[in-house]
Length: 454
Image (cartoon, rainbow, N blue to C red; front, top):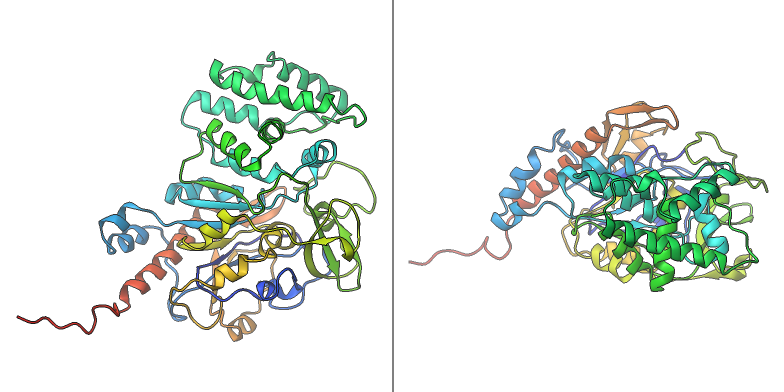
């Protein structure tokens, strides 16, 4: 089954999901959409999981209720849209980013840095360091589109080189030398800034003559990002630069779940004892073949057994002796402690969402929120109409999940049924509004017993 069909949502203060109970262990039963063991496919599935106050209430179907609920909390609250933290990979959630920006730009996008597929893999192979592909992808989706120059910068940084090695290398030289038509519309300050880091990236490649770099299907944005990271010796500084160049809203944060300048490798243990090394081998098993990964392909090989847990491994080695425990980004933990809601977005459960959730401190921080919360950790799921995820409503209800809300869907020729972005964001804002209304209806413990004395 292809993952990325749903999106899970959990407001702060809920108990951690079973996969968070004893990090870094991940069990197949974390797929709440099936409420049962994971199948022996290469990646899991996620649905939109939501915590509401009262099981009997239904989510609003329009985002129009959100401003009214916010206005009731006072002028300051009315001026501030809700703040979200989104756990996701770099592809599936991108389709709804534009609609989400219409509701709020106060979003912390938390992304893994363990991807080892596509042009990211070539950068990591030759230059080392964390994977930047997912971060670059989200930055581009958040970038400004209001001017012709902004569109030109976005087009340049979003460009990919041809699949043919010779053609890719030739086009890269035209770009790095400033002669390509992609520079049209980019003003001199932007041109000099972007080109400086592309040149620096190119020089770093030339300094490693033992490793021949392949430009096939290479992302110009990835090259710019890698050049900035190496120059500053800081992933955070590279994100800051990229965010300013692409003019991302100041209140929108793109955060690596692990802030590091080192290479990270994802691994997983199957129930039959098999250890698989590499994120790409988990999500798109190649059986030893070296080929360009088509991440939009709806079919992929099945793993020999179900996934038992996901963990991080050192840069070398392929068994459990090489398991490592990196620290979560402190900024992610800080954001988790203060945002209005947390979204587990659609994407690969085991390679997009779990790489963030397995880190020590993530689940504990979610669970430590002191705001009111019901006994169970989730009681609602949003699913796309006509999706491929089987749902056992009775089983879900027995686990405290009383709402199974169907959201309008659209058919994508590459991946099949996906959420309709407008409908999904309307449903999401409706759920936030319902939660806020419930909070407003609760008595204030500081004033409810106060009597006025004349």
